[in-house]
Image 1 (cartoon, rainbow, N blue to C red):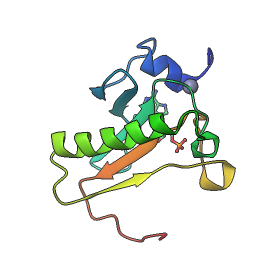
Image 2: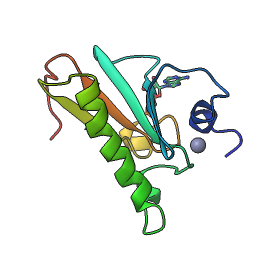
Image 3: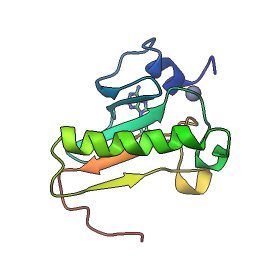
Image 4: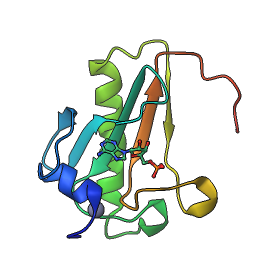
Length: 113
Ligand code: AMP
Ligand code: ZN
């Protein structure tokens, strides 16, 4: 999508601090970190959110989660991490390109689930 922030970041048109990339997936540090380690993992191809995952693009979502595991190893997140994907207004999604937040580096405190 031409006016999507994360499409532009994945294409290198907007700078970011990359931590992982392959053919299908791009990961970079969140500009407003909510934990000592806060990384966003996105598919290079535009998918709006988890609500848009279907049979045609589920493999890309799975590749994002495969990348999460690789990043956790690479970043030595040995004491644990949380993976979050906000979907829609009630969840507070602000960028409408599928992304998985990886949060780590401190005890997470209150849990929703
Ligand atoms: P969400 O609110 O779940 O849609 O998450 C969007 C995330 O994107 C937020 O945590 C923002 O801090 C982050 N963000 C927005 N713009 C940028 C950017 N240019 N580079 C890195 N992270 C960004
Ligand atoms: Zn996009």
